[in-house]
Length: 584
DNA sequence: GCCGTTTTCGGCCCGACTGTTTTCAGTCG
Figure 1 (tube, chains in turn red, yellow):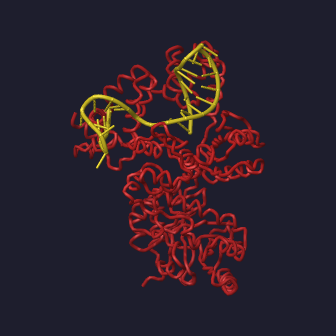
Figure 2 (cartoon, rainbow, N blue to C red):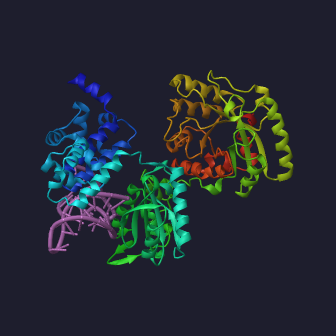
Figure 3 (cartoon, protein in one colour):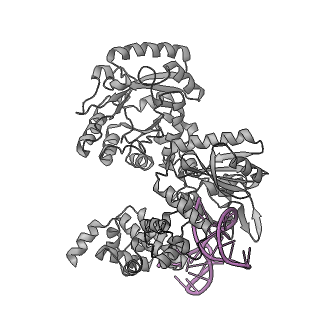
């Protein structure tokens, strides 16, 4: 037993434990167990997932019950899990129902009650079994499932199979903006309109597109919206909300209320769900019931026209959308200790972009003018270096030519400043693509590991470290090299990279290209906690690309970064002093 | 099953839409 225990302690992760409780909650819900018990298991599971220390450690210190949502009963179950890999109640329900039964809950319009019905009547216990029951028509014999319901289930099953459902934030946001624009062209009754949900919180991906609008005539707005040409299908339609499908099977939700509700409305549909639930808890403590309409207290509805007023009513500081994940922001906001996270307006310059000198689409002059009109004080042109032949990387000769162009533009555009930088390849053997005397000529050097990301952990990490330790490398670009949805990043040892970057004064990038967002939110937070400075950049290859900055800022804000953690929030000379090359 | 500046008991977020069980259950966000 002792030996087994030791093995278990090492092999079962917090996440695996959380999953066991989620499985238990799903099966109990199907069984029809009391809903608050189920909610308790799910809450505990989420808490466990967000607990950084291994539960085995907490257990040894007798601190399991310090985890929010974990009391005596769940703590005992965790101990059993650590010792034996399971616990009694879990064994009991999994002997009653197959664990695959919970797959059915993923099907839209199939909830616990219908799943139980399907199991009791037809012994349908998995997605495959459900498909069979549909094919041979048995499903039509189930009492309580009408033809409409079955049709929805069939559709739901189809959409589940073809699913790569979450959309990258860039695409979701662009689509969302297009829809909003189309709607505004068809009606003048919209007073306010905004993209909400994960898009507004700048998550990396969005499951659907949420749009919130204010109008005195919600029905008209809903009608107009449902008849837009890009709408393929109307799934649901009420007097102030609707859900439609557009091209590519992407779901769009629109909700519209009079402007007096705007504060709670926008808050409600921005989420996250956990953040909102927590706020409602706080409202209840004040005897008020919170909804998208406002706060109901003694049968009276109090409304708020801004989110700021809602937070103020709850005795809180305003929480920026990116931070609304219930990861401690509410507690800090209640005691007015919320860090002031970075906003777009804090950005004074953009330090990573490309021009027609390599693979950019616009001239340096056009990029500079566009950046200046965005309110920036400086930019750094960082075209690719020679080894990236596919991008017409710059040779030392062309670098000198480019410098002349930049110098002449600087005379013309002063006080706006164009820095000459380079995005230099770190070659697959860990050497730099340009010699030191060339690197010395730049205002700033960004190093990138583009190729050979498949090399093992040790190899890729040592290449990144070689760049970080180089005295003339100021910034490490998109440190993991991931492309969202298509390429995992390299297997870098980020902990070591952060430590070395902090030691050497090498700045790490949050690349705002919505397909990269690299460093990602939590990594950027770890980097800053390790003592690193960050550069947020657009990595623009065109004028439009300069707008990538907002994704970078959103990502940084999700990692709770403050303006002082980011070098390009500083005036030019202060920013330059932070570069390794200019430190004595 | 958890939790407590109203509580160790009695609460636990709130509202909308759909289909079908003609007064509401099931599902969703």
